[in-house]
Image (cartoon, rainbow, N blue to C red; front, top):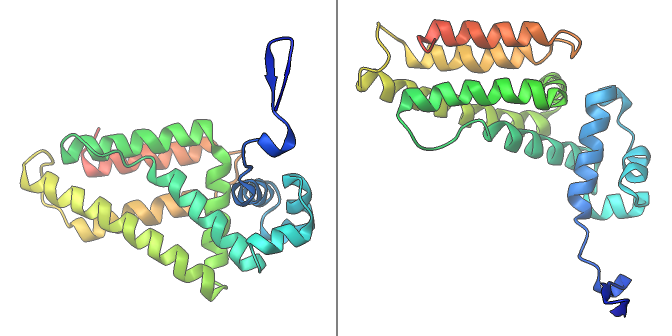
Length: 199
């Protein structure tokens, strides 16, 4: 470390560590959002992350492992729409509010989610990861619906299993709508809220 004119300058040895794994996931995520799985090239991902292909393979030995990293990242972004706290009904409203925020701020997330849904039908490794995450999502929504019915904040006869399945299926399907048509995704969200009695 050296000081120049009272300013501390970091040498390469003092530099903060770079999270190469996250950089590679982010680069692959952007490629899938723009080009789909057919356009995903590990050389291009490595170049976008500023590393060589050997470094990419150190972190992700296979393309499937890299896709798994993208899936985990995508589901973490999606889980950010499930804040804790508040009544079950408030949590459900906040979930849809969070999804609406992601549609506006991170539309590429829905393109990636659509690609992952399609890929999971053909790839057993991705299917298992994708199924685990959607099962958790569905169970969370179902649990909130059950609690909201129990405390009387959502009226009417309800089948929480079917309603949770509807939420997951509708939003998964809507994520396959091209990014040029965000209004369709927003309409789907609004209709789900109406059908659940949240609006």
